[in-house]
Image 1 (cartoon, helix red, strand yellow):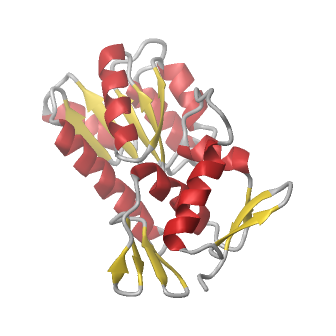
Image 2: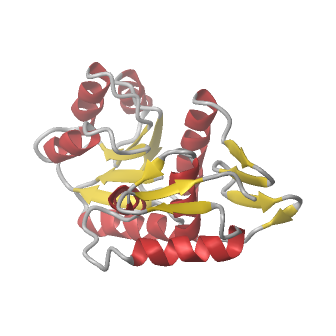
Length: 221
């Protein structure tokens, strides 16, 4: 899952990004309302964490503009304000949830997971089955038969991106874009490292290499 944080408090934004990356999400960070609107409008994100008090364009206007353009990405609004009016205004513009600063990081993660689960239910079952393999994208669990297969956060993120497009060819660039953030400048062969790890844990025949094109997830043998 790929998240966008739109927050002008840089230390807070980077702290949230670091924590959410450790949870297994790909996280991009921007610090202004207009840039946040532009990035969120690209449609590449599974959820947006949106501050209200932003330079250039406030969070209310960003949220309203996204909804007016037809974007249904879940939006969790953050604000230093407090009061029923502010919460109502945020929800009236189309936000899905609201969190007042200062907040608990544990609560933030719980709210994010709840919004992603809700979206998963709206779009179909979060449990994907491929042969004897079951991948639960809401609970972030992988089972082969009755046995759970332990995966690292990044291993699960790569598998998740492949499983939601099972049967399709997914390029290395697409995996990099959705599992790592847009600022990643490391070796693009990192994708091959994680695919190899998944093959060792889940079976060599699960992920097929399509030469010159990418990878295709197939039913486990």
